[in-house]
Length: 167
Image 1 (cartoon, one colour):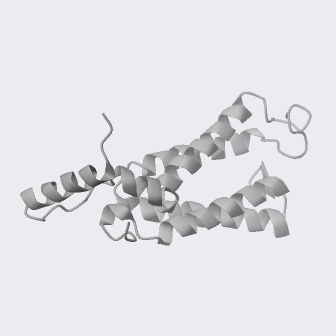
Image 2 (image 1 turned 180 degrees about the horizontal axis):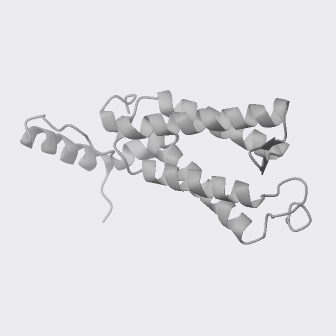
């Protein structure tokens, strides 16, 4: 049975009234997730973390490396073992952050974005390697996209805090 957004809003209002308006952390309603999904830090952490884990699995599965010759995309994108481990660790950290409270996940989202920005700038201007990781131009572009998205998500007001834009 599918409920309308009006019914969901009534349920949230009745819970607020029953608890005396003292609910510390509100749950995100289905309607808010659909409207503000890309703006929530938890959505960034969930999608970016899953994407990085998929890249790590492709690297572990020898579809994207560990050498240029073994990668399906050739010189465009290949992952050596250090990059695969980096993607796996960052992906797990972001997925873990997506299940945390909003005040705890926001710094993780922002830190991951700034770290990826640092790697991107390093790859573009300083060197193509960082501690054994070979950074291609396509990876640097991905890092810039993830950095911009993390800033957007990290600095937007989270709807779980009750401060999101009006619906």
